[in-house]
Structures are given as structure tokens and as C-alpha cells.
Length: 359
Ligand code: NAD
Image (cartoon, rainbow, N blue to C red):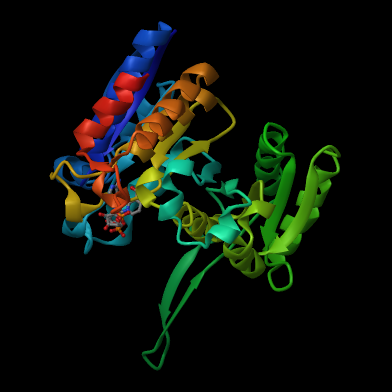
């Protein structure tokens, strides 16, 4: 198969980690008889420097004409003082909207070789930690009206409108139920229905969708309780589905309990097979250009691309198994290094080489 991939390297460590992911993709293609054709496009700080805007129209057009998109990370101090709509992060929101990517999928799984990096007690994680957060990505408070007004007395008032329509809730819930069917058949819908109207509608619609999936166990959970249960007993969760703001916070919490930001991939999906795949971490300016970044989250994002956009499960399994094997052999980048015996600290490039040679 031949697939066209738009590649956004971005800022900071973005170019380093994406280079390693492409190395692994090429090796996978070679082994399984596929060719991946890359078109490099600009987004974020590097796009601002070159074109004046964080998301040039050309980037959107090329992404739309591709089979999928791989992204490193964007942002950095240099662009922090620009107005909100011209900051690198505006590119992220813009590309999700332009590609109509309404579902963000973030797995949080504790890999055995990294169990010691988990901040939870072993008696909690011994029950397992393998869940997926399905987050609505283009609605809610991040996309509602944002307003700051100066009052007559000179004080200021700001508001962000959290808006959801029934069809937006229905389509994201369907993604969650379909995913649960391929996993352990359990969905928790996370809301704040005791306070928010948007959550009461969320609850009504999620129950309606649940009734069409009688084979999937279903429960509601309030977001504050969910945040607590994630550290008290994460094994109870399989698939969590929630709105944009709650999902943003809960997915960071879930990722951290698995050990390191540098390990967690994500996928953003819409109605078609075109998806955007990226690590959950940022551009890590503090280590950029030092060949120290952990490329595993980006490599696992590439594996998710093969699984969800290209229907290449065996190829995705090959990448995920190679990552586990390399970790089992004791190789670590500095962010996941510990003083346990038998571990060897390797660079970003070496980690990419090791995973690639395991494929
Ligand atoms: P960050 O995730 O970039 O870094 C947090 C810490 O984790 C840093 O100490 C960093 O060195 C470390 N880290 C992150 N990824 C790593 C990796 N792959 N390997 C090793 N260590 C890693 O978060 P931040 O410092 O809050 O943000 C830096 C910039 O990234 C900001 O401009 C922010 O807006 C941007 N950002 C972008 C995205 C994105 O592109 N999706 C997401 C979050 C933050």
C-alpha cells in the first residue's frame, strides 16, 4: 500500500522526535511492503517565523489532501507574548477544527518494564492500568465565545462559553462505545451533571447511545470523583468518554500515572479515516537540540496512525512490540532512566535506531 502522510515537525524537540518516528515507519513499510510518502508542512512557531501565522492555508490544504498527519509538537518562549490567535497553540486548535477532528483518543497503559516509574503504590497498580480516554475535541469551553469586558469601574470580567449540541455528544459517545467493543466492553461517561446544563444534556444523550450498545457495560461518573478514582483505583476503567475541558485535564492525569509524558501517544479522529497523530507532550524547549528527547510517544503515535487510519493492525503491533522489547532490554532515554541495575541511558537517535532494528 502507498500512503501519503503530511508531516508537521513543529518546534523545540519536534524535529528530533519526528525524525525517529519516520525512521521506524520506513522500516515498518519495508518489512510489510508499504511505502509512506511524506510531505513536510509548517505549523506553530516555525510557521510564524516563516509566514507570519501559526497555521498557513497551505498546511491545511496539504493535510486535507493526505491520508493522515503526523505532528511533533509546537510552541516555545519566543512566541509566548504574541496575541492568542497568533500563538503556536492557535495552530493546534486550528488544524483540529480544519480537519474536523472531533475525537481525541489517549491510551494510558502501564508498561511492565516501566512499572517503577509509576507514582502510584504497587498495591494500586497490581490490578492493572490500561484505559483509554476519548475526549471531545472541537466543542465546549475551548471553542465557545471567549470574552473579556472592562466594567465601568475599571475592573474586568472574563467568560468562556461551554456549548454542546446533542449531535456533538452523540458522535463522540459512539466512538467510545465502538472502542469499548474492541477492548473490555466498559464505558464511563464523565460529566458535571449536578451543576452544568451542558453536562445534563451530555448525560441524556450518552444514555440514549448506551441503550444501543447493550453488550457494553455503562456508567456515569462526576468529573471530580473521576479525577479521584483515577489515582485510587484506575483498574476499574476501560474507556472514559468526556467533553473537551474535562478530557484535557483527566488525560494528563491519566498519562502521568503511567510514568512519563514522553511515552504517551494520541490520535485525533473525525468522520473519515484522516487522523492527526501526535505525542501528548509539548515541545520541551529545555532539552531541544540536545538529542535527549524521548521519541517513544511519537513512535507510538505513528503506530496508532497505522492502526486507526490505515487499518494496519499487524504493522502497529510490530511497532508496539518493538518498543516493549527495547525497554525490556533495559534501554532508556534520560526522562525514564532510573538507578535500577541493568539500565542503559541512550539518546533520542539511539532509541529510534534500537526500536527500528527490532521491527
Ligand atoms: P512539555 O511537555 O513540553 O515539557 C514538560 C517537561 O517534560 C519538560 O521538562 C520536558 O523536558 C519534559 N518532556 C516533554 N516531552 C519530553 C520527551 N519527549 N522526552 C523527554 N522529556 C520530555 O510542556 P511545557 O514545558 O509546559 O511546554 C513547552 C511548550 O510546548 C510550550 O510552548 C507549550 O505551549 C507547548 N505545548 C505544545 C503541545 C503540543 O504541541 N501539542 C502540548 C503541550 C505544550
